[in-house]
Length: 206
Image (tube, rainbow, N blue to C red; front, side, top):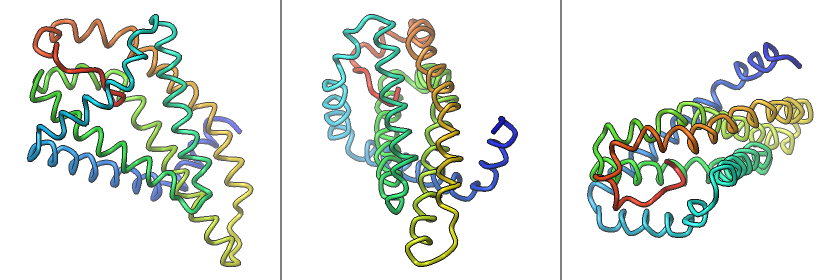
């Protein structure tokens, strides 16, 4: 299957991808609103998550890059392939990530300003986020087909699963590029913002 066939496959599952985007945006907005209303609770949660992931910051840059890549790839792969379980896993993944992104974005804006958030997230996020959301959309599609299969419909689940697995080669490539950018380029870009955001701990969504 070449890239044109992969693109054609993604076009056929566009509604599921749009569903993942919609859920992510809605939950990110909710997380932002919660942080806006209860900033102290949001700050405590973000700090707790960052503390648990502090070990990544202690790694050498190459090891940090691989840790980021493997974490994102494993989560994306699980959201995609475990979608056959009625779409439950991709639903949980998109909801949790949306909420965390909303919380972290508001906290980061409060400390470093909007420019810091854009510089810190956009370079790698413009690759990483669409890739993850596409994987979630594929997971929703597989979950829908599993339900149709159990109800006795002709869902062609096996063929769709093969198509999904073949997409993983693109997921590997794109998430690897995003991890490289996040590890080696983003730290350079955010240097002018380091003093104002010195108290903001690292977060998995940034």
